Length: 97
Length: 297
Figure 1: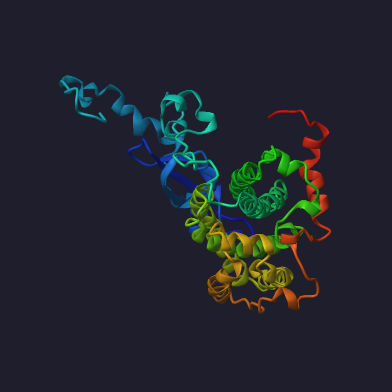
Figure 2: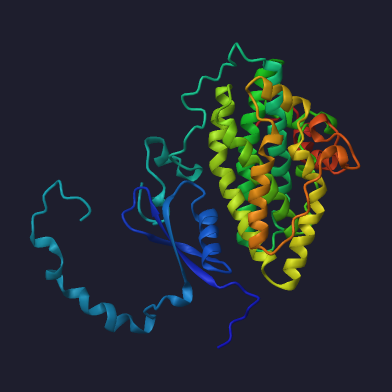
């Protein structure tokens, strides 16, 4: 497949906030190259003091599950209650659980 | 704060921030902890004139950048240019406020921005030139950002504590403006034949106005002698070295920076001599404030 050179590719943007522990997906943007994607992400998604770190990745580099796979992928975990750590007492001072 | 929308939860939480996230949170006041009284040993007339000149540079260039809204080649670039314009507008507000305070005639930032005519503005003429194409605007912004950054880095040592604080805030902003425009200069200059031609043309079109940036006008000479300001002639070497580095990477040719006395028009924006482009820019900038002089916002 030949890529349309007149159009900038799509990138997905992940930001780690001051309060956040991990990068979270916040949206997407168009850019001609990786460096420009980072610059655009800075201008589009951190204008209101949201972020301390940015990841960008080309959307076509992401492999995603499809809605067709929903049942075989996710339904089987729906009744495995024993997989949740609800049978333990979690001490008050253990964060992020 | 709820985490209903993951993006909102990124904004730093604070007591006020919780309710006002839409206006941003966790902001720093650039003048926090700075004594804003004009120091007695400083000549307030000189301070006012110098802050006015630096403030006008930022205000006029911010207006030109705002003109790119709805006209930029890509949505993302439109936001980028608007952000840079708003950084400059923020600098202009602080500097014009300081100028008004030092002047002591009761004029605030709005009075200075909206109720002066073109001949009372003291910005360099490079700031007021019409936008031209994207390459022209990038060339102008690259030169202005590099020049202003060199001045602001040195102004952090100003004897005026407010000017020093404004400069310290501005250095971070201007560093980004310079990097943003340097990236575009290289991308266009070292891009296609057409983008190279347009970038080179942009450089050549703005070049006659670069001499003025390094010419010491009366407000700057007085401010330098008073320890308030910086003689722009002293940053020429640094600025030119940076611009040559960018131009080399971009395969562009930089002409020699003209000296003002050798250019066809003597004087410049710092003494109130402007191009015909400034008055229409101000008409638009000032139209709402002049139509509704009692309005508040």
